[in-house]
Amino acid sequence: MKIDMGLRGHDLQALGGEAAAYERLGVDGLWSYETAHDPFLPLLAAALTTERVSLGTGIAVAFARSPFAMAQTAWDLQRLSGGRLLLGLGTQVRAHVERRFSAAFEHPAARIVDYIRCIRAIWNTFQTGARPSYEGRFYRFTLISDFFHPGPIGHPDIPISLAGVGSRMARAAGEVADGFHVHPLHSPGYLRDVVRPAIAEGASTAGRDPAQVDLIASVLIVTGESEVERAVAERYARQQIAFYASTPSYRPFLAWHGFEALGRELSGLARDGRFAEMAAQVPDALLDAVAVSSAPAGLGEAVRARYAGDLVQRVYPYATMPADDPAGRIAALVAGIKAA
Image (cartoon, rainbow, N blue to C red; front, side, top):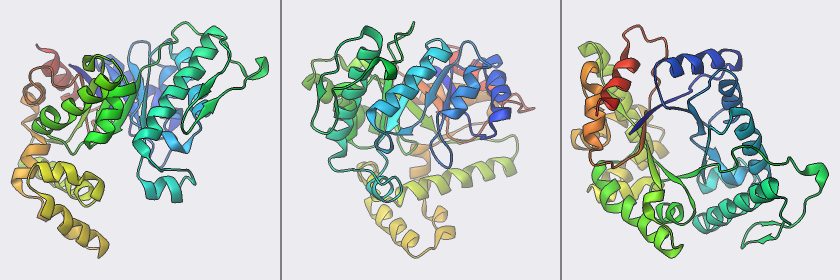
């Protein structure tokens, strides 16, 4: 199991130093996010100050960019980083894709499969000079000239991972992706009984080995050196669980755990703007299913035990763990996870 960290800052002048500090602490990879800022620029800053860590988008919104635009940006970052890019893609939800990005969303699972195949066709042309000839259901790539051709690179095989919660997107990942980003709203049982079988089903349709698809898990953590610090971490975890559980897209997970009614209740509170009340509605059983709770000294061992049996291949804390943490919790987490 590899241990990664998220780049939460957005000051591009400071991010390089942050990335280098994480690398010195022994983490395996760094992830950037598409929230209020572009997800690729932080990786550019990190690539210039690191030598070993993987650099990934966790995630970039696929439908907000054409396949060619996505392929071009990834190609340049792969060249700059010496082959360390992990291209994580997500579909987002209909409202944001259509009303924020002004893009098409219909048939998202089928669309993202076509999107990824188109990207790989573009990369093949970049690397080999093959004539563009991709004609998919939603996307096509049939034209390029030397003026727009970036040329081959030393590490042309860029892993693509796909984010999702339910079985439809997991099947899509099994069909075309190298990894599957597990949403923070997950449990080991849900991964074993829902996600992994769906990936295997998708892989079977494409004649692939499901073991080719790594699981990348963002993990909610409840820890602290004191009761006060732990209480703050627990409230944050409950807030995040309540926020996600209020969204209909995550109902399959809640239903699997027997909390479908809670999802409807939280959706109602969100519609009424009663956000301050939502965290208190998250029961201990759901918190225990989703979050890892441990004292800092045993956190790495707790994370490793949660995903025993090689259930996931990469993990990273959902909340920020600053690289200059004076308590040395990142170093302890890295050591605990890699102890095996």
